[in-house]
Amino acid sequence: MNKTNIPFISIVLLVSVVGLVLILRYESQYQKKKDTLPKEQPIELSGYKTYTLNGCEYVVVGLGQARWGSHKGNCKNPIHYAK
Image 1 (tube, rainbow, N blue to C red):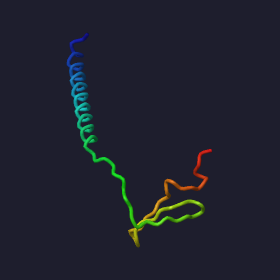
Image 2 (tube, rainbow, N blue to C red):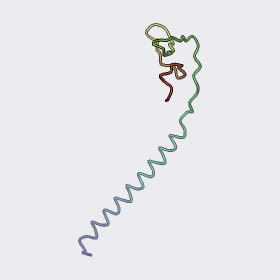
Image 3 (cartoon, helix red, strand yellow):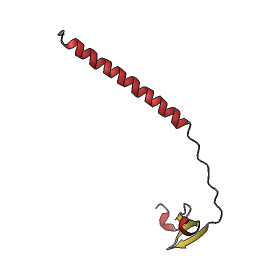
């Protein structure tokens, strides 16, 4: 091994170790943050309406510009059944 390569190899090794430590530290912080997220809670809706359009069921909630809707997950239309 050449004496001029030793400082270069030392620098590469040092940078690699520092990078690995930083990655592992970030990963542990990310895992802690992920574990502290609130759990999903089911949403109870009142005052909604169900509509049927072309054989598919839709749920609509709200009034005016705050109104929104979505395709129901338990739609009874046979096109959603797996063959």
